[in-house]
Image 1 (cartoon, rainbow, N blue to C red):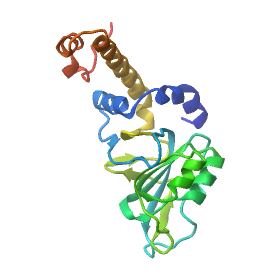
Image 2 (cartoon, rainbow, N blue to C red):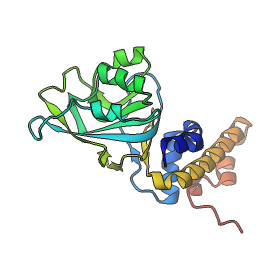
Image 3 (cartoon, one colour):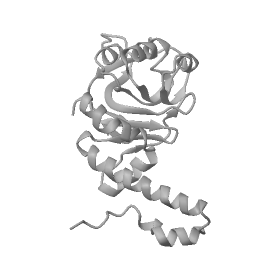
Image 4 (cartoon, helix red, strand yellow):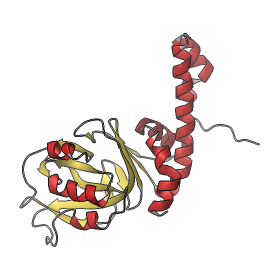
Length: 229
């Protein structure tokens, strides 16, 4: 699926869904290990939706450093893509900052998702670039970590991310949806969200929690619905 097909067919639908809806949908349709905890907005309540352009980091000296981290990934991103940085959850070494963020924003990138630490989040907030990461640290990456590869399979937590897979990140965490499962996951998430909204409406209308639970069969809501004839 190219980025134009993704934008026209799925972006608005994903914008309307929370990561909790998508995680539940992955459970329903059998997509394992899609949810990533602990990676959250470093400023505000930003949300990031797009296809992944990936970067894998490693310790300085482990591989030759041929380019500053992120430069190639940013230059080759399409509008709406998400930069995904796999730094193995490292909270001691920053791997994203102000210069990269502004370059990404000007390229049309929708945000960055980092399994590790970032810096300059105050500057990123001033020009409205979403940064989702495990933590922040003021130190530079130079001399500490280097880009090992980009546009390769990586991991966010326990979730595998391939270039082109779909990333949705909000205040609850991150969900990774394999691109070939996107349509069924989104359809299931929309059904789940509609049912949850109906339950909320019923509660606001005065039904008791027990009544709502029985009527909507809350405990079983992630079971696959019966096939339609």
